Image (cartoon, rainbow, N blue to C red; front, side, top):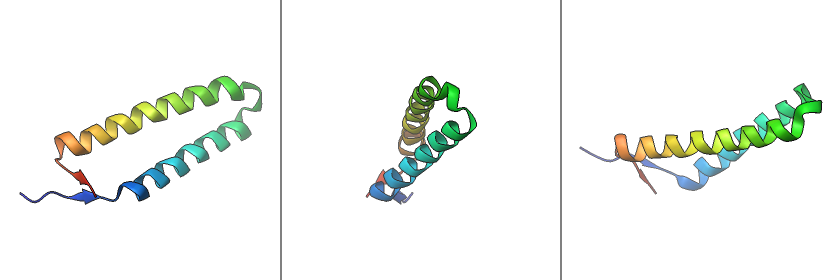
Length: 65
């Protein structure tokens, strides 16, 4: 079985852009709840990114290049 590789810098940039977009949408949609909701989004996104990285490296056996 061959291992698939991911380009780590591109992945980090894409994840950062998605998180920035989520925070921006949060600021536009809920300006009065912005600080607490932004913290929640950042923590939730960090957990989701960590679990996603664990899943592709451990379960699918992919490596970072």
